[in-house]
Image (cartoon, rainbow, N blue to C red):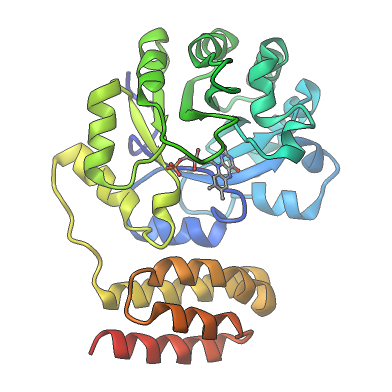
Length: 320
Ligand SMILES: Cc1cc2nc3c(=O)[nH]c(=O)nc-3n(C[C@H](O)[C@H](O)[C@H](O)COP(=O)(O)O)c2cc1C
């Protein structure tokens, strides 16, 4: 089934602390693919927490962005959903898969897979409150003894979700082990709404394998985009035309890394941007000559000009 209104069948995965506005900007520069925010707590939005507002505010983005909401109260989801139009969201995704203790203990994220009634009330309230499409992202189940993705998918469909994303791991697995594509296949067979498959896709070929194996309508990619923002578009091109795009050159990696750091500094200020840039820098240079020593030096820097110098020197040696 087609994913109406989306430019691509390939989605970036929401990742807290990573998929912020600067990262989306970078992904957009790399080509086509659907973009998403990090999760935003509905209660924080209600209390007008500036940080949550900042995460949810996508009005200035020149591409459609899906905003992901997280929480446990249908009423607060309804309030947050009403705000989403003004904040520029293309559509709303509901987080029912997060395994983080603080969130699960608060009966949100993947805890909702154990409370189908509340999960259904949340979806219905969100759908009713907003003209935007509402999707749900969830997991295979709570643990191996409680695998309920198929039942959960049917509930999402009946509650009004426009599409669903299933990550083929249980909450108990966190991010370890291997994603179970059989569950993704079973979910796809069980519902009529579009299904996005998620888990372990790290190449265009693997995206195609998952699509062929499970019949999903789209794929979602998370960790493999870290340091490789080109991958989203590469997967999009491969799935839509069969063309394999060339790997980025060292010089393209350098330019993208510099652009990413500048965007982070522009968005968060020099201190905050430089701190956040450290993890991105290590992902971009992974596997390059003497990357370890470079990372150690980079971590000590707090100023953009020093960062640019160090990066220029490092890449000059790598390109020799
Ligand atoms: C650091 C990190 C943060 C994440 N934050 C979120 C989040 O905010 N919302 C969500 O639904 N999933 C979150 N996830 C899960 C990813 O969206 C995705 O489901 C998971 O990484 C599996 O996909 P992958 O194998 O392509 O990485 C996060 C994952 C990681 C590694």
